[in-house]
Length: 138
Image (cartoon, rainbow, N blue to C red; front, top):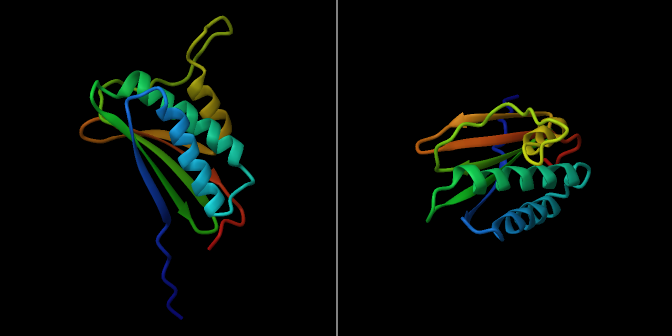
C-alpha cells in the first residue's frame, strides 16, 4: 500500500507596520485555530504570536513595509507559526535580567513552544515556533 503524506494545512496573512497589527495577527491566528479545531495549546500559540509580531514590528520591519504570519498544520503532529520580516537585525538568544523592562519576549517563546528558531530570507528573516498537537485534525 502506497500512502502519501498529505501536505500541511496553511494560512498566511500580511500586516502593515502599524501598532494595531499585533492584535490583527492574533485575531488571524485565533480564527485559524478555531477553524482547525485546535484549542489545547491556543493560549500558548497566541502569546507567542504576539511576541513574535511585536519583535518584527520593533526590530525587523523597515518603514513602509510589513510582516507576514504563516501557519502550517502538519496533520496529527505539529503546528508551525512563522513570522517573516524584511528588515535587518539579528535575533539574539533570550537573556533578560530580573530588572530589565524589555527582552522577555523570546524567553516566553522559548518556554512555551516545543521548538523555535530563526532562518534567513532575502531580505530579512523568519522567526518560527512549533507546537506539538496530539490529535491535530487530519
